[in-house]
Image (cartoon, rainbow, N blue to C red; front, side, top):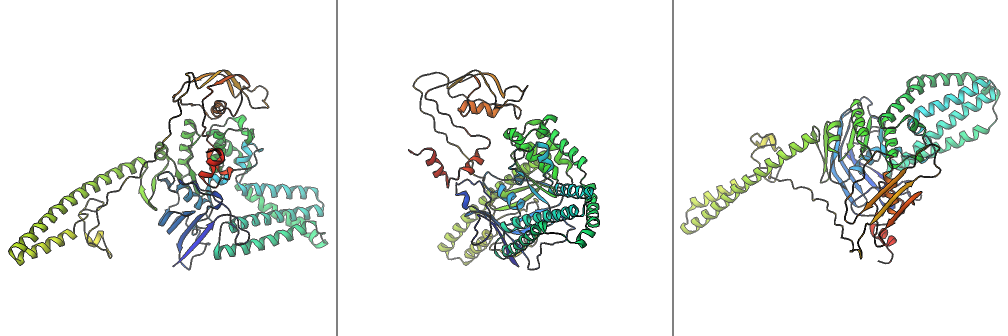
Length: 572
């Protein structure tokens, strides 16, 4: 057996073509230098062109690390087609990194034909597209087909042989360009021997694109012109056959249904992405994932920034994806109970599996902990009793010189070695041949009581006392609008009067897009009111953690948490 390694890290033109996959860990590290490294065990007969009759994933001896931190060690990943899984574990243990390794193709051994979608992959940089167009364009195959149909139809309607030849060349060039981009993505994610082969394929794809670009401007001969119309018509027939599968009208109706379910009103379908708040942008990314419907869908905290109606709709929609394998990371117990049928537990570098939803897992876990605690207590009592009898027997044998007493002591010592689990996990009597086959250092399993993960605690030091009393902040008839204001649209925040006293704990709730983040910006002072007044206590200091705080930290480029704080507070 051999070990296949895939590495995705910083771009290094001299050695290998690689890119960064950022990962949020408990300890702060330099993000530009971080890399997700994934290994899995494959036989020497392994090939990526596996039997397409199965959509299951079964990878053994997976090792996953980010930077110098090991997340998984010789773990077993098994995902059966159509099963909905909930991936659980403590914060920072590596759940998101595992999803990225799956979604970005870093983990070797996954069938190449399997369509995998990780929601973060759907982020778009073009914010001047409408919400509906962004969702529709997430199906790249359908978009490519529609583009080719338009090019060929326009050329054939013109009727000029030169125009038809140019149309055919344009379609060929665009297809080769897409293949080159796919090859480039593959090459950037691989290293070693597989990376070398991928870069050879990339060089070959680049040469084909360069030749096709030359052909676009080259003159055509009579033979090419004579066959151009027939070739274009045959290609167009094939494209129409593909369009019958990806019907544009049906696709738009499907996209609108998904957007409606996620809370978008009809008028918002044509709204530009740049005009949306953070919560609505999350919904757009989620709508893209639901629209594409891959064989494996990976959702990382999908309920974040969703209000209750959208969460309930998402629960119902995910239940309809019977043929899609789903892996969900969520801290919402009710959402997991409603959407998953198996639980994957990410703990101590291993993956363990439980049949059932989260509540069923929690109940079974509590029962197992109670069982092992009682078993451990029983074993310790027996151990103490046997050790006491051994000590007593040794004293009596030493005093009397009786060899029988020494034989009894030896027998008790053997019994002490046999102490351990007396029942298996099913509650049946422990049988060594059935429950402990193989070679071991002891006759019985040691009773191990699972220790709970240490809780994450936050310690916020109290602020310095204020010299004089009064509210920390007072708003009077405050309104705010982002410019330019659309005609007939009400201000984002309108006629707000608010007092915030010292030591107050205030919850701000409301639908997505209702102005909650804008109000926080007004409180923090990052935005000024359009009308009204805001009075702040002269000694008050405001700290803000926004919903996109992590992304802002990534863009800052700081090497570590220490560098970040030194930049913010240079005098410290």
